[in-house]
Image (cartoon, rainbow, N blue to C red):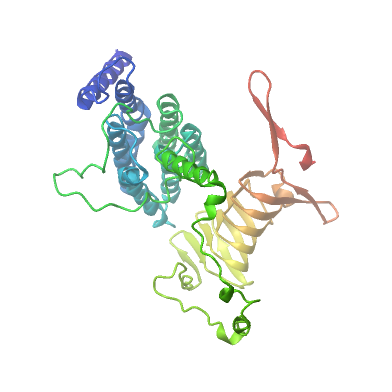
Length: 474
């Protein structure tokens, strides 16, 4: 009975949306209005009211706290996208200025989701917040052409890094953990959105070609006066490629047409240029020769104004090395080769953030260590229970003296890992990184250095994709 009830609910949702759209496409078999109205109904059925997204929201409420608060913003974001799709089902493709007004509510909510995560660094649920933040860009497909579905899949893959952290943390800690199911439901929700976009908006957001003209964004609910025209959509939504199926194609075509028209004028194209008379020519007017050289003393640097494009660098924050609860915080250290964390225990973690040209020694056995946004930092530690992670960093050296089961390297350029005899079985997971080397100890005390592959070859064998390391890696 349950599958039958779900099917009836989906049909009901589609009928309600069709009724609300009021035949926006204007009759006629195969008209754009009918297809667009159907796409709105399917968005509700497959995505907004889909089983996985409902499960994701319900589990967020079960986990509670700030996770539920962030997901509430995500839910609003999908609601706004549904409203935009309904608008597209009633109107023709607007000009770029109006389009930027229309997508602004979605972009504003995406900004809120991103800011929510960034403001909570160091929070014990930080990996949850980052998982949502990395995936929320999927709603930006409305500005992508001609291939929005692959873009949604890219956002799904981007969210996996932090999502896998959550799964790894909770899968053995709690039986049937809601945190693990929460991550999986979020991933499946994004994939459901990808399948929807691929079917109904294959080359970009579909507007109703038989609909009415859209001259401005609809007023906010409540009947109040509309806001003044906003700036272009926020940067979190991807820019629309030129020549794509979005709102900027007509403008680009007009510019090309004007250019070709000017070229076709032949010699007449220069008719609008000013003529240079003899008194303006240096070789015919000696008076101009003496003033043609600009002395170095005459060149003055431009004063920086308040409206300058470039802003002053952010003020340096004070360095920190202290234990907060069960987490060691090491931040903003520069040229400090003598940092040490002594007597670490299994309940403590170490978080190193924005350190430069420094060395950190961790003694004892800690739960995990994370290096984030560091440059030219060396880390030496005894034992780690779960993993050592290097994220968004450059020129990092990691040396383990005892045991460490997992090394994770993400978005890092230059990372050298020195294994110990007790950690030869360690798993090294890398993504979006380069110049990675592993040094394996030899019986004579020296090290054998090997590079981690960065280039891969994928082929279709008739049944599945098979990926192997490229020959260039040796």
